[in-house]
Each structure stands twice: as C-alpha cells, then as structure tokens.
Image 1 (cartoon, each protein chain N blue to C red):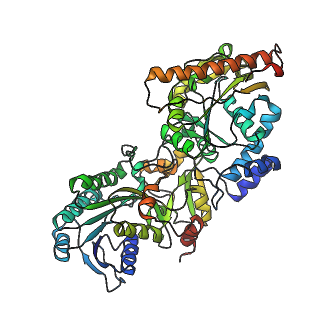
Image 2 (cartoon, each protein chain N blue to C red):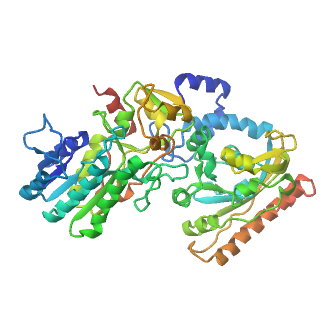
Length: 304
Length: 286
C-alpha cells in the first residue's frame, strides 16, 4: 500500500515516515524542506503543497492513503503566509486526495483547537466547538484548517477521512510547541496559575497517526498519551527551573528579557488547561501509548 | 506546586498533619507517577493544604455535623445546600466534614463561580484540589466517574445574602436537578447554620466588585473581611432520588427542585432550633 506524507521533513513527519516504512508501507513525501539523512526507500519531493509540482506527485504516484502534516504550527514563527499555508495547503491536500483517488486521508491536527479558558471543562470531546479562536487569532488558521479538513467528511464521503486532534508531542527531538517552550534552562510561568498539560511521546504520536491509516478511520478523533501533568511539574521534571512572573510583567516581557516571543493569546494556554478525551480513538483502534508521563519527560530531558 | 526551596518554606509554615495525610491517602483517587490524578488533583498539595485547613476547621471554627452517614461513602452524588455568609465559608466547612470527619473520607468537587479561576493563586489552588468552574460537561463527566459534587443552587446571589437574611433561601437554579436526572445521581441535601454570624454582612459593594472582577465585595459589621470564630451546625438529610431524563419541561423540573428546597429549608430550621437550644440532638429528624 502506497502512503503519501506531506510535511515529511518535519520532526514528527520523519517519525511518521519511518514508522510507515517499518510497517511495510511504500512511502513518498512532499516537503518544502529536504530530509538530508532520510532512508533511501523514502522519496522526498521538495515542493510546496499548494503548488503544481505537489499535485504532480499525487498524479504520478497515485497513493492509496495520504497524511497531511504540512502545517505551520510554531507560534513564535509569525510568517505572513502562515494562514495561507495552513488553510490553503489543507484545501489543496483534500482536493488532490479527491482528484487522484486517495482512499484514506489523515489530517494531523492539534488539541489546541479547543482553546483554553477559565471555564473550559477538562476532557474535551470531539463534538465540542473551538472556544477561543477569537482570543487567539494566531491559532485561528489551525482551527480553520481543522474545520476545513473535517468538512471532507461530508464533502467527499468516499474518502475515509480522519481528523486527529493530537496533544502536545514531547521527546528527544525537543521540537514541537511544548518542547520549544521548555528549551531554555529557565522556563517562565504565569504566577498563580498552573494548568494541566496533556502530552504524548513523539514516537507514540507517530504511531497513533499510522494507526489511523491502518484502521481506515473516518471521523474526528482526539489523540492523547498519559494523563495530564501540571505545567510546573513538567518544567521541574524536565530539569528546568520554573520562573513565576506576574501576568502583567509576563505580557510586557514577551519577546524580551529572554522570554519567548509568544502572541498575547498564548498566555491563556499557560493559565488554563486543554485536556482531551481520547476514548473514541482508543475504542476504534485499541491504541495505547507506550511511554508514560515520566518516561516521556525523561526522553526529552536526557536527549543530547 | 513549588520548587524545592519554596516547598521547605511551605512545610515550615504549614506542617503536614499525619492524620490528614493518612486521610488523603485513603481517598478513592488514582494518582499517576507525579502524584496527580486525571483531573489534576495533586496529592501532596492536597495534604499540605488540608493540613492547614484542618486547624481552621477544628479550632478557629467549630462545626457540629449531624447525619454524615446519609452521604454515600462511594459512588456518584450531588451535595446540595444553602449558601450564606458573604464568602463561601459554608462550602469550606462541607469540604472539611467530608475530608476530615467522614469515614471513609471523600473529596467533593465544588462547582465554583467562573471568576475564581481568573485570579492568580486561587486558580492554582482550586485546580490542584479538584475545584472546577461550574460547567455542565465537567459536572456530567465527574458524576459518570462516580465522583461527589458540591453545588449551591443559589449561586453567588446566595453568598450575597445579608446577615439578617442568612437563614432564608432564594431562588434555586435547576441545573443540578437536570444533571441528577440525566446521570441518575442521588441528591444529598444539607442545611448549614451560622454563616451569617461568622461574617455578618451589612452591605455588598457591587460596582467596586465589578471593577475587581468579582461579583461583589461584602462589607461586614467590623469592616474587615475576616470571619470571627463561630460554631456552625451542618445537617445532612436523607438522600433524595428523582426519576427522569433531565430533558423534562421547566415546570416538571421546578417541582422537583422545590422538593429539595423544602427539604433544605427544613434542615436549616432544625439547625437553627438546635443552635438556639430549643431542641436536642435526639429530636432531629434528618
């Protein structure tokens, strides 16, 4: 079976490519970036998902399944074409799947879709709407991409479409939203708040994405790892020093004084939890994470 | 919750009470490798906090608790009672009775007002001790997980009662009843007496409160927002169960709510009579 992966040169994309290979799939990738030390079995086409050369890969390769991971998620990276990449890229992906007979499409989305607020419940279920896209415009493009991907469920019912809302990934690559946030020796926190953070080992996340292909999932699924852990506990377990700052100071210092340059809307994500219920995914696939909360944080901490 | 040096400071300020620690260990909760349950309850934070709170519960205040056996020792249920006394001292005392007096101890999840989680410190404390903003999805999930909820159907307007009205009941919300019907949870009614004496409010500053992000700021007889040491009566009545789906018309649900309200009114009256020594403990009908 032939599987096409967009965004394959990203840290998680590579893990997905390798996991597909391990399970015996034929893999081809599309990415604007190269994958220099990639395995010879995986052909990577350097192309932009929105452009003609990417469509040519769909046309000539005729994949049975396709996984869309070509989304820009770095909050610190405010490139002007982020919205266009995330939304138009997703649109192009869905349309190519339809045009070239892809039978299974997987959209690897984020659990931040649900948003963080003082009154949001723990354990969001898939039927809940996004609550704080208005408070966090930098996330609006990802929310829109998620909703657009989900519209394929009724637009192209002949394609088995799985929209995955995956919790923060963490692991030896030290990439991803949470990994980047924990990078420095001192991690700033908002004083008086300590939200639960839901995370999954990056290898488990890659396995979950491949599992969605293997099970031909059709629908929207939250994907999570072990039970959530308070952010300050994660920071300490990762060998970092938490630095609690009053919210006003935190806002003023963003992007200065060694603080990360986060958009103002991200502060709510450091005050309130986003925790998801992944029972539907577990029932559909029997997926179970392999790395528990401590092993996952340790793998991040001890990576060189 | 805190770094190593902060932890030592906290340990000195609030020494851990071994009896409290044993009680928290006995709670029916699943802690992960960091001592955190799936809802973010931190075992060590809870032990430290309840150790400090136990002193307030036992010595600063004194709570005469009656009918504690009426609250099931396991399984889902909703504690429903009256609110009074400016700030939610009543909620804290109910917590105290369930954690420090009940055998085995239980941790009720109070459905609290949204503004509390907007305050630094309060948000962290509430999150680590299992106290969430009242939200139907959250409440249903906790009940289906066989947890015990604590709901004051009078809401913030309940604590806003002035001292002279402390033992009266205002309109009850119906959300708790729909929850109970939908999740088939028993209701454990209670009446709380003495709230109006601990913190006798003579006025509520609503405009100033709004500026500070709270519903109101209570003003007491002595100006300060410090409750005086008080003896309270807390009476738990027999469990009440109702049949239905939770999707009945308001009329039907209101009739059920009124039965709970009458029951609580009766418990308050008995508590008041007990407080004024007009009846003895043996004469209580819970």
